[in-house]
Length: 166
Image (cartoon, rainbow, N blue to C red; front, side, top):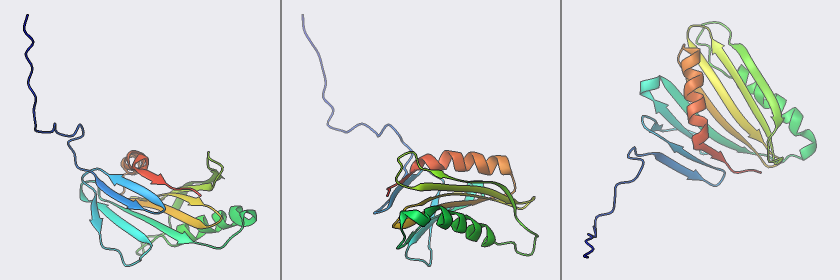
């Protein structure tokens, strides 16, 4: 009985043929699948991306703070208020807050902040953030007028974001 085998010196193609856009920072990792494209951003503490196919933009940023654990709840509440107030209206009327929440992160190392807001029939904004005694980490996505599509894209993109806490 003979055994036949072959050896290929060409490595097999990666299991995931789609090339992901990887970004590693000291405070987070982000691996975005196509069609996300990097954008130039004027702030040193932020990275920005655009998905033209989805009419969406994403900004991930970090603000380093000197805070104590005692005032994280108040700080998280202020962050959400400030982020909601900073949403651009372009004269189209007020944003409507659909949901907002602050809760302890499952690791216990941070407070997790989130909100969803919309400028009716114009834009959707979705936010996920973390407040720790030394930093605020922000993951903000802006999408088109289709709320369901924006939420689906947000939910599909968040798993590619790996914050480093605390």
